[in-house]
Length: 129
Image 1 (cartoon, rainbow, N blue to C red):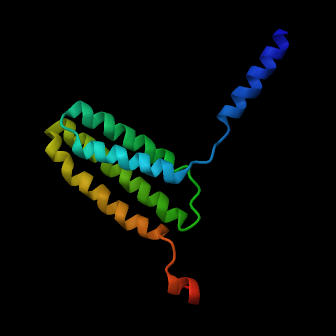
Image 2: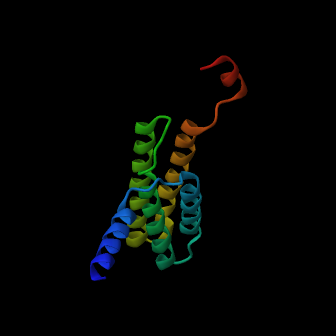
Image 3: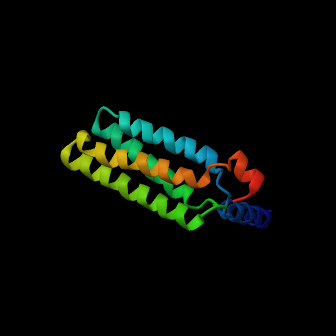
């Protein structure tokens, strides 16, 4: 009986460590929410909680499979993490207002790198790219 329990424990614990695909759409929605909470934070503790969650979610996004421009996508996520860490450092050293510039940079990076993953337009589908 103990042997069966050990086998089942090993079997289920190894399957839980197997790499799971990231649902990028859901992860990005949660990332956006964490970003919004960081931008709207009214105190440093609230900001740190939100920015830490944001960084964690962006790190998870890096494990997703990108079908279009994967190198550029990962590069963009690295830039976002760098800006988030700058925002956190600035907020903790100089106050929440100091975090606004790096947070704005994150939004600009989001816009830039989301263009890589926009669906093709009508004419691009019709005539190819």
